[in-house]
Image (cartoon, rainbow, N blue to C red; front, side, top):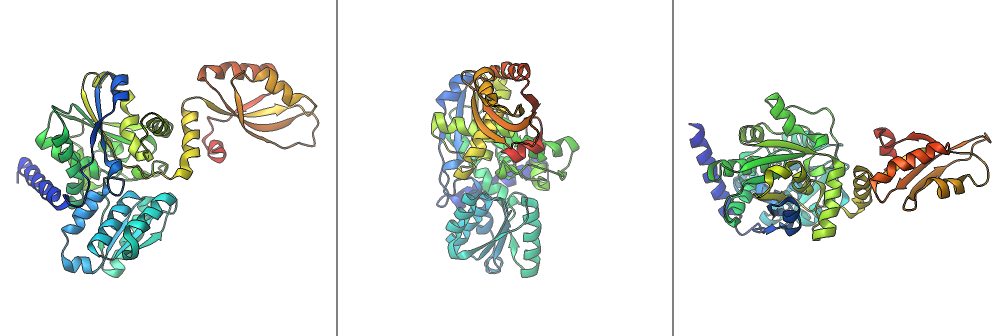
Length: 420
């Protein structure tokens, strides 16, 4: 078959998926964000998949896949591996379709996502915590499938999964007045991006689709650079919804020639975006859900005067992570700094530091000090929050002037991981 014929047949399958899902998923709103539209002088809309029934788009692919399986296949039970959102979609489908499911999740999965999976699946699912990453959980799930003759529901690299996720793109085009000039889509394994590319390539080829990944887990970007999916040796799990070591073969093939660009975003900027969306728009997003918004600044000039859509992929954020998110945001903004500080072991040393070194708006937020046997000096770890990042250089200068400065810790990743 010609490439165009293949694309057309896939699009037909997407329409069939839409029909299958019409009574299962929510047609989520495509809402103008007035705040960002003013900032970027564009018409910026959010596709609010965070308002989906399982609070992410993953229900689309999971349910569509299971709805296309035979009764015989379903009777053997289904298995999946997921950092959270795909697991919730599969769990929901298991309960709705009365199918037994076993769900493998990485050990560091946020507690909120774990509880949601159990809630959506009820008595029809068992949860197995295994491994530190999605890929380790996936390997265990595949072994389980082989041992129990069950069907594996892949989170992204499966035609039916991709076609289910692609219904998001059909809705965007249906809800849009005029042309979508730029579409920003978060990428983990690439299922959503592959679905979006499939639809827009056929129905809106002029749209520039930009994939967005966390910089510490940029598996699609690396795959495009190398011309094939490659396994990243090490990734950060912080943006858990997009922390995948290797994109799928199928998702890569669907994305590689259609994506206009691939962009990455640092974790600190993701955290800033999470807080900004909450404070300014009362929108709660998980780290992966913030990717498409966090990247806008990189494209400020390109998107000016254009119609822009950002897919907000999910809102399954654990409230216990908020302190870490706030800390990372402050570090990224240059408003939080950690130092090794030398305090002479004499009365008044700390008073001198507070009165003569710190600026009027500086605040000590962390202080750890152990008195040594030496009477000459004592080293403390001190965290200082600033109101403006321009106050950083004067702070350093005064610390050195009064001989308090020993070392600056923000640039040491191993030490910073211990502190935050």
